Image (cartoon, rainbow, N blue to C red; front, side, top):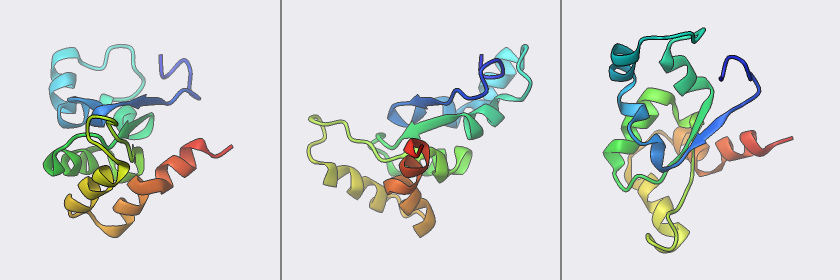
Length: 114
């Protein structure tokens, strides 16, 4: 579908579930099928993720796999409380400053820009 609709980007909530931590497993089980590119290409170039994960290790893994420029700040309000809790999650993940800035707003600015 992503090859047939090249302007389509997909946002996956809750840090993409297992997708950022299992691209190799998914490819091993399913192959490439009719896709023009390997799965990791789509994960890094066609999907966006929100930062709602509750685990700094999961966030760092997603950043390592898909890049901080694909992740946007998110909350699980009202379950986690105020947005400040989500910002604290980002700060607690010990990410490079450019990655932190991307997640806290630059990625969303780029995605929502006309």
